[in-house]
Length: 366
Image (cartoon, rainbow, N blue to C red; front, side, top):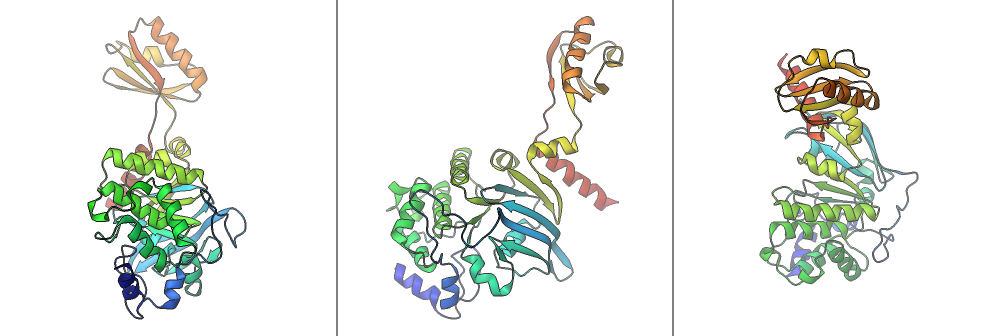
């Protein structure tokens, strides 16, 4: 059956619809070769060093735009991703995330702008060479349900023209902890395990850049945690990962840097840097009962710029944490307050995301 599937998808003029989760270009000998890794192979348990590239930049995007008629899917997007980095790409539905991945993966041609992927300029004549250096794991696994795990990987290894396929399959199965399930039909696996198989498939060509599109979508917390651990393992092996996700806590845990896209690129940076950039430093104070005169307690304290009340809690705007915290503590003790909690306010990546998306929504209403 494997040979039948391989022969069918290799016939000239036939389009692949089940391999990468979306239609690809017409398949002939050249397109089949486009997924080959060429001479670059990895030793067991290791990721090969980037071949044919210079510097430390895996992805470089400059003013990239994709339009469908008058509608912009994404516009004037610029960023860089270093080798070995886990880069999060966040945004609401319809923001252009998947279209960006499809464009960088050479499935769509950009309307304007430029990009370099694994050292190769994004251009029609370079599509084959770029696809030799990347893998895309779509949200839907796109596996053959009646084939076993190993048979699926053998089929795709043949399509990708992976050198030493048996060795690469064994490495990929070990990387996703599925070596003991190689003989199981994919249709018998849970969704979480099928996602692991899809990740193993994406690792077969030993990619320099791995695009993961919503890898934990629809998974329960345990299965999502397993995928997180696999991504952590790939990071430790030096794989560059471009991660699109709606799970903000996932991005905060896994990503070195994140970008928030809403047709245009709204912000980019490390999660901690984004929090500091968008939110002032504050202390949160909780007391057993509201203070009778909070202004008298908090006004004029060193390092304190202002305050506001929220029930029995108080948010204190500060300019210096080390100066303000002891001053606020002494003032509360002096006022005889029953203090339940005092500490630095913590804003999450979700707070950053919602702040920017809400700003866009308000601007659109004006």
